[in-house]
Length: 411
Image (cartoon, rainbow, N blue to C red; front, top):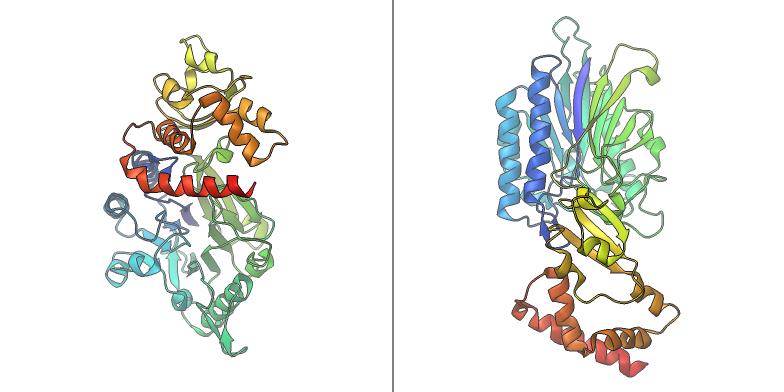
């Protein structure tokens, strides 16, 4: 039996509506570490699979790097034989993430950031390997493939779209697997970062236009298991293919989703493919839940412990006020009751702005706020950032005023 734990799309260093998520991310990684530690005494994990987007941007902040470094150290302390498989995602810098990979490989930490290394096999042995030398699978890793990252000898050109790139990578994997005496008799498994056709995306992902960059799931049929990253909502693509989703909600359209790690058991000895894989969802407890609330401003502003909204006071919130008139500086005024409010929408603005031009919408704001473009921008910054220090926004304010003036002149 092969025992795996899958996660991905960590996005360390993520800023959510101006709010740092470092503490939230450390909180969920600690839960993964605890699960590995608990399992060590009963059914130890043979490998941890992390399916890309380790960081939220190509040049991550120092603290994000430190968090991931500490995370790997803790896992290695628990079990030095535990294999950790990591690929770069589209948010990562493959070059930066690849630093020290040859050394880390000796510590059973296997990074794959170079597309040319997708054929390097990582053999994962099960807990019964000593009694049964067939209790093993062979993992391959495909990082996010940028346009032109692989060359096709058959087509005599660099490949452009995702379907062609993934097809080329998998074809190379199959050839290597079948010609290597150490791997040819083992089942293949895959760790990859990509979109699959028909899957469900969320607002926090970088998406493509149209279907040209989506992958048909049929391409994975030769693998006993496929761990996928890129989509932030957990989902089953087919019998052998799963997205674990991101461990935290990174957009408000994920507010009702239970985030999970995937606990995977693969019985390599069973003949029926449908019964070879057992998936158990390990629910993640966030430090702060992500919630969307709707109601009258006064109900939020005058909130008491008996209020229906009181239980959300420590959550990351997007609040929609249903009042018929615009409320001035609502975020700043609600901050005392809801310290983690991140976004507010006012139904009054949308009601008054229905079927109006951009000029008329501006007039709605000016009538209620009595502000010119510059002051409007300043109030917006104060509202969203909850700060009176607007000096660093001076150049942006100037640009905003120029654009606003141009738009008004055109109309």
